[in-house]
Image (tube, rainbow, N blue to C red):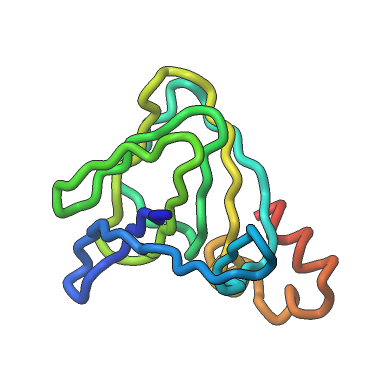
Length: 145
């Protein structure tokens, strides 16, 4: 299984690379990956006309498209279609960023899985110390961000 990884280099240029998931048997006939840290998940709906100019990711996060794909262009010129069921790990939180647009002219539903709530809070201009006071409050801030 491949994860599309969008990251930035030391010069701020964004690039794609592939990450292969390593599998291990967890039960007869079932394999799983190592447990990966996450801080929750939320559902996102983008308009059929979705076409974002250059931007960085607001936080490190996995994105899984559920019903339609998007096209992402890294600042180095490589472009990829991220189709339904594909997993994208965005990590270009600084630097030149990337372009993102709808490819089928349809509303897109996706699952976003943030990896670091502190980065999300900073992006949402919240004081991280407030978020750490309780799980409930942290979740509320993350969702409302």
